Length: 545
Image (tube, rainbow, N blue to C red; front, top):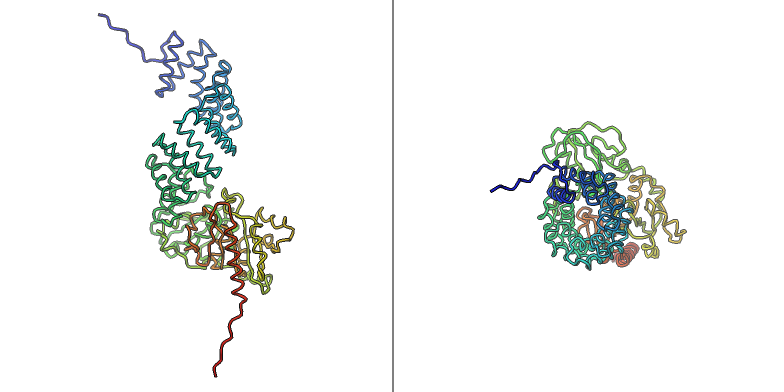
């Protein structure tokens, strides 16, 4: 009995039937044998240069290699040959999205939907692309359409959740994410997004459970670890939070950190005796002000400390007992053995909620500048500084900031002199009020934070949203009231009216996101009471004879 001839596994062997060749190419493609698949696709095209399936296969291979131009050329050829195949337009959109050509991607997705109104994948991809354009309401609508066609589409549920979360529909977003993980219990991204939503709803224990599940599914999931660290730190569980806080440097997080390369090794807590240590800033001005308190501890551990901070802090921090204070624009770096970020120091020193180094003041104003502003800020009224907005470049600035008009209730309190320390574009709000507020504008005279510190030293009180100026007043041990949004930065912790980092700071917290009315009503009452206590005459002392 004759045995059947064996099939060759060499893709270079000519297969005369183009259909058979394509089938073999598809099989190789699915198995990851991309070179063999590409050879066969090209063999098919040598006989029929317009074969759309072969062109589509080459497009996918080129895209996987990062060759966007070649991928689009192959796809455009396939679309020219088969213009009514929705999948080709959808894939073209995906490749354009990857190349950050979102307008063209959106057009391709819309074309795919026009050809096939029941193509649910195209609806999901269009929703994702629209979110990149900031049109989250439309994105939610397209995600809902995809779900109506395929209720078991976990990606569509996750996409709907993200759109709703951004729109502030947190309960609906959480429901969408829960559906996603019910459909796909291994969907780490949906667990992470659910955690973010629950965090916004102040359901912190549930949020931590979601982050833990996401990390269990993907141990290297940087975003979930970073989010978990923020909840742990916010709730005062510092010892647990510091390890995951290191994930802030991961490329997937997207934080803008100080990216300079420093000589020497990164300090990881080893003995410092006789070593020169470069301590450098990393994030915002407020972070630098808060964590520069650790510099004396480094010197106590035997290090010779060099401090690099943002330019606007150099004049303020020159008094610190360090080898030198340099700004971020300094072109030449000093010689050092080790380097470390300011924001690594709390974890390296094992900081917990019970041992925060809160000895204040640790920042002092320039005596000459203090004397200048003392002569400028004369008068019997209670001198109160106000700041209503942080750096507009910060992504969450609109959440943490209020408006000048929100502070209008403070202007009506007798015996109070209000001074604006506001800097940046938000300082224009005062000019737009045409002097009707009665607030004296000092912002234009404050060249850097050393000037701001001198003004704060002469104020009776600072009232500020979460800005570097609030941190500065706390570091100087000056009386300050902080106005905090419903989702505060982790440094301010939860619910408490005080700060273990800054003993002289009193905190007023939003009850509802974006609503400052309750906070300002409390502040107005507290300020009126402060003025009343200050002006109330003391009872005469009885003289017994």
